[in-house]
Length: 425
Image 1: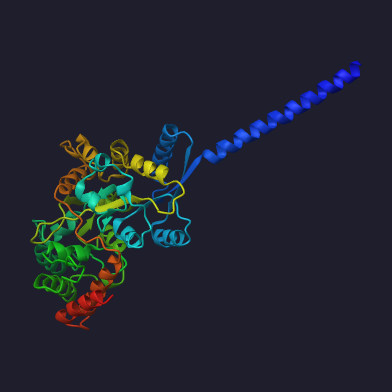
Image 2: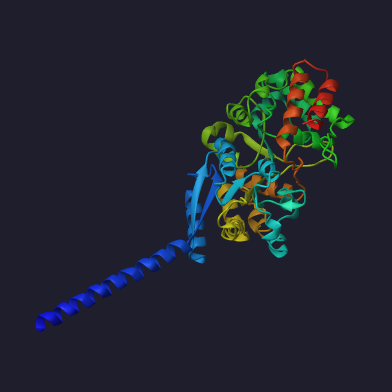
């Protein structure tokens, strides 16, 4: 009898154990399926900002229980191919750090979520309006602005002293005069700018600064105008007079930094974020470096470069992805990242912080650059149009400009061919 009772107890306990295991496994299964996993891609921000992003992600996850963020940092040169492949295969990440020029190409293929349907007007109004506009195409918002840079003129005081130059040029016209003096007195170049179609859009921006319009309201070429021809002529003359390095036709913007750091050029048109790398790589050059506002043309226009965040349409967690994108770019986090990376924020409140307003009398070059950049941002704008095939516009202009620089075409013919190439794309 006792043995039978013990047997029944064992059976009951065994059944209870199985039942408990079933409940635990079911509840565990429910937790795993309800967890929202989002993948976040950035461009070349590791390892310098690993600590910043680890904390950012931890803060977001603690404020949003049940949401997990996986951060993947992609090398700058690999991002375009990697995101193109992922979007084409319909396996994109949920949140991606890009720039509007490239993002707009995929926006034209309907790759990104329409954020006008996800972001309230109140939230949108916290960002600088001109900067938000940079991530719109055909009246639809495809990205959230993140960090910004405005170009500065970084210059080598020792090299200018050798050339007998006391006044820093403020326009491209003045730069041409100074470039000749530097070449004559030192044998070196004033600056380097690239005409490689896949690289910097600085030359196209200079067209706008010189008064040219790149495309009209219908998207047709508008640079075949007196102002556009004058801009073509300017760069052709600079090259033919030997005032630009020959590798301007083959090397990208990275070469501009290398030449400046080696003391071969007097000016570097770049963002203040490069001052730290110059100090690390070329301390002697850094010690001789000073800064001035961005070069411009007769229009006085100044550029701003924008990095944004997009959410792919194929994201499995669109609401969580948008929430994270807005968290990354809110006032508090933008200010923190701007301080860490020596860039500018794209929200009004963060930009109004005292950090961007004043510097002490003993300020370093980097600190002075921060304030000059922030002040420039008040007048800065996106100088090139947001087009789904912007890369084709740049290619048409740069390739024909190169042909004129090499004497293969006249300036008039180069302008005409570039316009025709763009219009018949």
